[in-house]
Length: 199
Image (cartoon, rainbow, N blue to C red; front, side, top):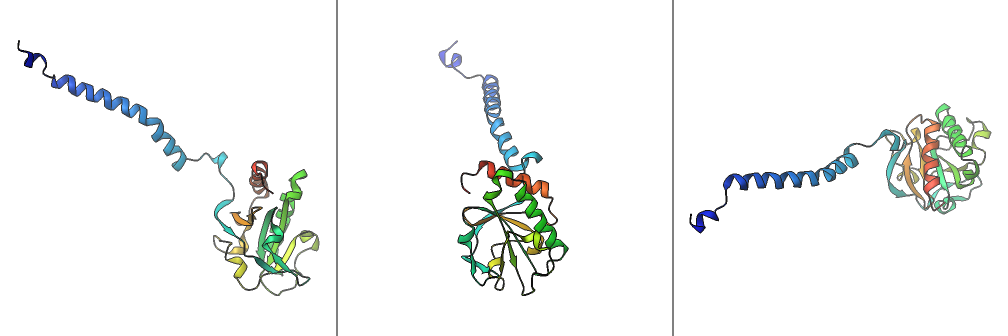
């Protein structure tokens, strides 16, 4: 048998070798594909935020005018986590429910409640007549000039449907759904306070 014949590559062996190499490559690739799929297409329910995470948007420098005529500036809120809502001064049932939920969520933080502020942006000239004053005791209230301060508050439908969460750097970062469940709002905020190095 000539050397050229003995050195010839068996096509069947070559094909089997390629299949083995491809199999090894696919086995090595599988964990990366699985991790990608889990990260982008399957998020366990227990790890999801209740509130909608928003693209960070800073509040305007001046939010509105407080009842004493002084401006409410975004800088006044810095260093705190802020539960913020927008509504009419008439404060109908939906508004009162948001004020109540904000108060309860803050109180439930226990020793961390001082890290949480509440704010109410009033979008009209109606006197604060509809809500029990106890609901907004300790709340920073400001009348908003037009829609200027609302531009950084994206809404699913109506900005008055939501309670927003502003981070200690003054960025709107989370929007709770309409008729939000206080217990689930509480969990979101507790998680943030636990891991936050600011505010």
